[in-house]
Structure formats: C-alpha cells, structure tokens
Amino acid sequence: MRVTATVFLASGASAQDYDLVISNGRLMDPETLYGAVTNVGVTDGRIVVISTAKPRDIS
Image (tube, rainbow, N blue to C red; front, side, top):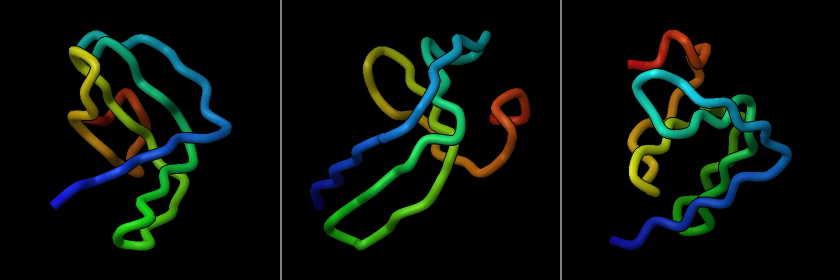
C-alpha cells in the first residue's frame, strides 16, 4: 500500500520529540480520500505521527 501525503497551509515549529511539527496543516491522501486539518510530527524526514491533538500533546 502506498500512502501519499501533501500538506498545505502549514506552519512548522520544532518540538523536542520530533525534528519538525507541522501545526494545523491540511493533510490529503488521494488513495483513501482522507483530507483533514491535522498536526504532523516528522523525524528523520518521515512522518511519524498524524494527530488532531495539540502539538505539545502529540506523543
């Protein structure tokens, strides 16, 4: 299964557990038709968490 994610209208901020946290970004997956405003945690260039929780609450 291939997952394609595109993030629009996002502002990045670093966090202790992630190299990058994108807060309130528009996440879209055309394969599953998923589309929502989410927070994304990125480590080593890979998305490691997608959550609707506030960035400081992502674990």
